[in-house]
Image (cartoon, rainbow, N blue to C red; front, side, top):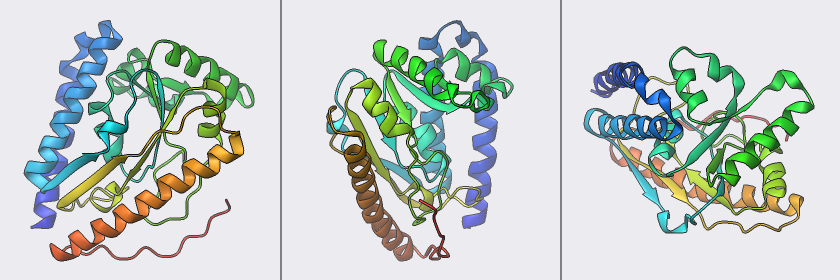
Length: 256
């Protein structure tokens, strides 16, 4: 049953994504319309996930989101949070790899949506270019979303936080909203199965601007990891009660 429900969701998800991406090409006329398409895609996916896979996404701590321009630092375990956060922030911009802009159709939406693309081929100049684009997004009142680990990490893997988030925090001088989650239990990276239960995305109290960069790095890591570990424990207990226990991951070493 788990396999069949996962199959039904995956087929429906890719079909819906294709239809929305192609059918909404006229939205490329403006960023506002592209963000509307992203919200439609996110809400459609969350509905399909709940109906077909039995996975409900719960947003906690919405009252912690301050108004106005904001730096959002989120744990990254799954593709799920990438799309789910589109349904939360009214003026979001993602920091992403420039290579994603070259994906047919999807890349067009990302480009017209005002995402901040990092061109890693620029070497040391990449950081300066990212700073300029990020500052412009903040000046326009955007909520700038970054995954500080840079890529999806397996659940319970040792944290590897890069310097991008702390660098932007020091440069932009806006609050940082930490985001904890346990989505990797229900929509694992590089995995086919979509497990039933409650995937939680929790918005923690924001960190005001002004902390020293090293102190901020330690603070945001401690907040996100502590909250995410608690959510993972709750999620594992729920999955075990539903008869879908998740095997404990093999130990993974970290150079950080």
